[in-house]
Length: 296
Image (tube, rainbow, N blue to C red; front, top):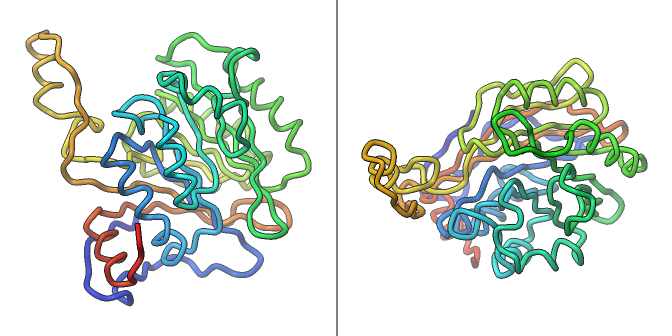
């Protein structure tokens, strides 16, 4: 994983990433955005991801953007206005009811495909990238240690039937258990470009390209305050767990970082050629935007 902190000049921000040839398209998946701190760094980092990480497409899991649970309309608009290409959600998809109309009306946001068919929104989005290319973005919920839900394997099979004309395909698998995540990676190996896990907020060190050409990682990690318990203030969580005192879990504020995974897709056949992780501090993003005169 590449982890970087603040530096002084634009040249100091270059990362040691594999070269990106014209035959490859680089997609960056930003892990669970948590609360206001996560939203601030996610929107501020877009130009860094475009110019330094060389992202052709940026996909953001924003299901914890609204005070740690759900997505508000204003946060959806902030991400899209910042030039995020697509947004995925998870088990808190309907926590903010105002997002339901967006799920039905907009084509750049997906909810888990294995929710009831009558639920607002869809589990597949075909996103236009540049003038002539598209990527398919899909989402599903895991079942191990999660609330009861329809089969994610069959739900994604149905999504793939609708995405036959799109070669580059990303699945955000929002799951709790690494066994669930690994099985989904193996199940879809060779049929999608990447299966990237979200939900646990902890980045895993298992990124790889599976034998069939699918990039995989159990969890991309959290975008938000890392001096925390999964994005929440430490003292409140400790009080609730150790002393059984009901306490509101407020979003923390310190040590804000963006966690993301990039993968390079072959434009011709959709296979993943290489994959890696980055974790970027808020200080680094602020310094980069100052050095390059980016307005955020």
